[in-house]
Length: 318
Ligand SMILES: [Zn+2]
Image (cartoon, rainbow, N blue to C red):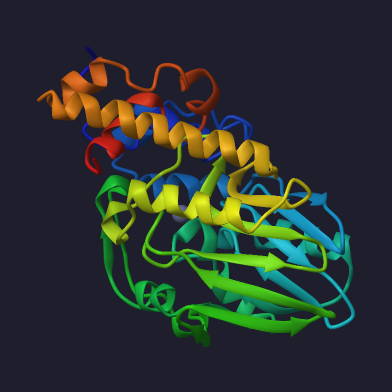
């Protein structure tokens, strides 16, 4: 078998994730890492030129993509509400995308969890007048130093202006633009602070990084994520949606319930396969070599994580 990369977030994966290919920055992955650059820096640099696209859903809902995680935008007479902030250096392109929707100001920014590709833009969006809402643990994670080993990066405390100021524990409702927006914390899944945001007027559910459509998801063990939590989050999402619900994943294409079922079933099958191999006494390298994800690699292995890396994450969790 091929040796596992020393840094489990492989170079090729981060090239894809960072949009470096579409940005025309065909730097050799080996060169990026030889220079000791964390993927976090690489992703931020890529976002500096990546275009930001607007997809219009229904009920004045839109999704911006191209600056880290997907950003949902709800526009209306009261102004705009964003779910997630993207990468700070995308500011001019995010501003232009928001203006393309309307000239209403951003009143609220909701953070789906603490990860930088969803919160790095917090400070400028707050400075532009938005109040930031988050689950309490998101603020706590942002306010402290956290070492994410898989990203070879130490996050230092965010500046005061980037910290959420409306905090909740289990759930929060906000009346805005005539809708009753419902934020709800998941049990630890992708991290220890993931929330869903539901827009009942449009039947749109933003599920953040509990779903990557259609890709193997990252599970952040450094901040409380687990595979069984991811599966529980999917089951919860399936229990509160119908075939008509529009579901916004943290990364990848806006999707529907049938696609989320496929993702959940993939998680269950890989969990079963890896668990069986581990119980037979196989080491991690031997488990990776057995390719327990092979039926799914063609469909799910084309973004940040390939089958080998996903197997490694799952092995730690079964
Ligand atoms: Zn994340």
